[in-house]
Length: 176
Image 1 (cartoon, one colour):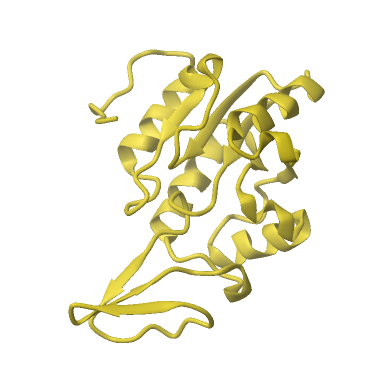
Image 2: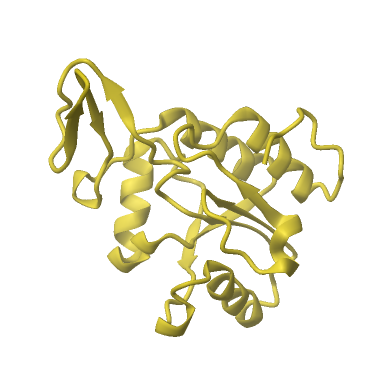
């Protein structure tokens, strides 16, 4: 089984920038004549459709299921599935679980991912999509560091695909 460990903020939920106010339920900030916004869990929608389309493509082409590793996991798996589908995730892509949360893991997301892997030997291969590098050294070859302001990009998708294909030909050159 192929798994995508998915962070939310900075991966499929990235900041919006405009000269007009956003119709957001929660937060927006005005600075230097521009409005900055970021979707909150109560918005029931994420604001990077392009990143979600690339996530769709990655999951479909690699028969991958999603496990939420984001702190948003406290909202529950059903809420997160609805939120992702409302935002553009194809509803046939399975969001199967969240990584465990334990107080002693809070500083290292890699520990939460490792705990999930330890309890799920059926996982054959995995990709971690996250904007922060809090992974264990053993997970680095499965980790795609996403630019917080951009979300999943085409080079990120290509790199993740190469991990599933177990190749080191990452296609487009990536900056870390």
